[in-house]
Image (spheres, rainbow, N blue to C red):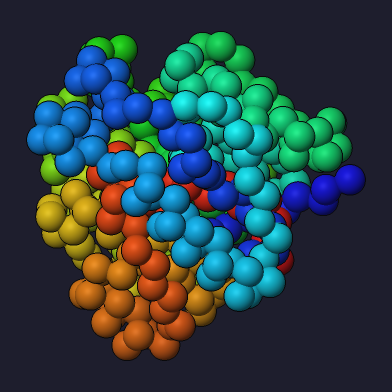
Length: 304
């Protein structure tokens, strides 16, 4: 039996599901793009290739192994994108929640069933059909659960809106002892620089009391100010629109003082070093072209 446990983003990581770029399939057509950044690269002929993405993911796996983390990988599906394991499910405390994701992606869930079947079945939950929720929108902070959503009446028109208010209510009911706070995120189908695909595209905690944040990712200033009040302005590293586009807030923590970042994030790296963090750098710029980075491609199962 696999004893899962995750209640924040930064405690010592012991086990994780890391997606795979092997047999990633052909470059999608413009109509098949799930997000504006992928669309941008499909149109420009710069969409990432499997041969360039595999080494990026292996570099991350090497960092995990350096820290003694158990790394699970999905079973391989031929010609299918299985990079972003964060979206397909998530762990809160000792419960595994299957996400309700875009219908085209359901096979990704089948590919990690062999892992989930090792978890106590009483602790595995599937969201009902009307509940939309993806793991990138769910951020854990001890007694808090932060959830990214989109409150616009045109929710159904946005393929970039992945978590609805029913998703927020579902988590509130499932975890009544937690403080569940939703954040209304900016969405765009056509401009990646104005699209917070998930909450972790514009905010993520780091260490024991700090965070990285993009103020303009929130539709309501009150949502941004909630995090400022909670963490303190002096503990928040603010990124700009271009840094948000490059997914700067989508790093991944192995421990309270160990953070993995994309090797191009110089400004973030310098700030983390000033704060006393150990920074592990990996190349992930090709994967980032699909509007996902380090946090997006990982699904933590066990943290201390």
